[in-house]
Image (cartoon, rainbow, N blue to C red):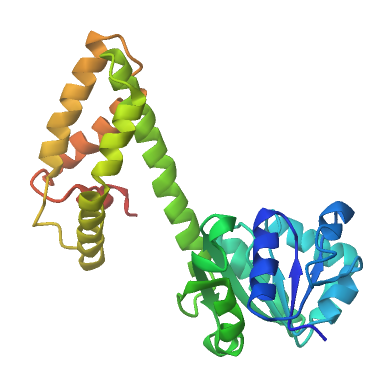
Length: 287
């Protein structure tokens, strides 16, 4: 009997399996691709080509495949509901909070304890300092906490709401995605004046310590719904956007990104939020 079964041996799933093995746990691994399964032949893990037998080998199954739909497809294809009865399923596949709720409901029908998780890190960080979040029943989490601690020294339990981990995951990704768009806009402006992109990157990196402090400040403002102590107000950034749009016009640059942002900031000013924190813009978006 293994301590844990890992379903899925992509980059992240492989990192998870290796972290369990490095921490001294016995692990059974399964992957649809025989090639990826064979790569674990000398790892110390038990390689099982039959997914039903793989899950039956351990009290805990950790799933890390493409998405929740793929998990459900495996369940249906192999009739995994029966073998999962009485076991704990931990999902690290990518999905939405609603998919997490649906999976919890399905797990309950088969008497399977369920935790939903997200790994906000690269595979190389798993087993060390990867930021990992878990949501679900507290007693279930307590029963596997020591096992999951093998994955990182920073595993954060978010509470009993099963959608919390997936919700935080897509929230963080939305922040990064919009940051990337901002970087594209910044690079376009630099190109218009012959400033090298690597110089732009170095300035941004050098400003990160200050940015970290400001993000913490803005997070506190959002938590308290209190926006009256701005480091830089909506008015300040609205005026900066005027200059960005002017430069875009002068150099005939695509201004779609700046125009989108400017629309939000100008609406914030029009609604009387101009002297408040930039994150007071959330008041425009709440329903």
